[in-house]
Image (cartoon, rainbow, N blue to C red; front, side, top):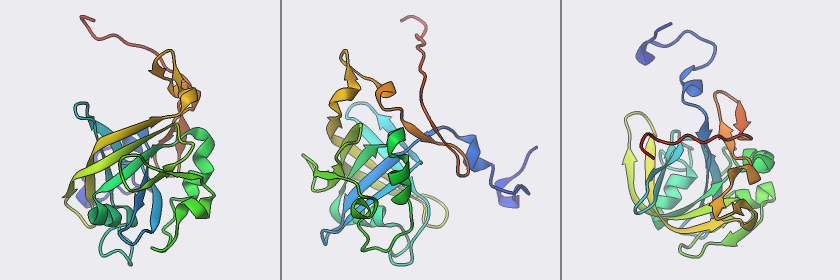
Length: 201
């Protein structure tokens, strides 16, 4: 099968959503200029540089009360900071609650019953028991082609690692089993790892 996205695919659901998988989930916490809090998951998320450490996430739709974008991007525009919380398998259900298109004034931490704690280097909350949280200072927001497609890039200014996830001097993902996004409504968790050495190592 071959199709040009501009012509449509003719399938029941968009296959592009299932091609680039698995995708890590960035659970983005932000605080608005008015002090309101927001927590929302984004599966267009990844690390993009080591030195200095940098990450990105993309927001691809809009809410009617946010002038062409979502709460996360709107808050980041106002404050210049955000926190990426890593999602573990055990938090899948509360993470899913925060994925709703809730009203602007909704505090997803409260709605989903998630404990929060203040970040160290930025004025925002983070998920208290997340396996890891990355405090970030915005470097740029890039608008992509299409309606309401924005990518936020941030430099990591603080890193929180849950103590039980640090084993023998390494961050051990099997201690928390990262939740990943697949296509459509499908998710997965990482339960097995293996090592490959690059040529010459």
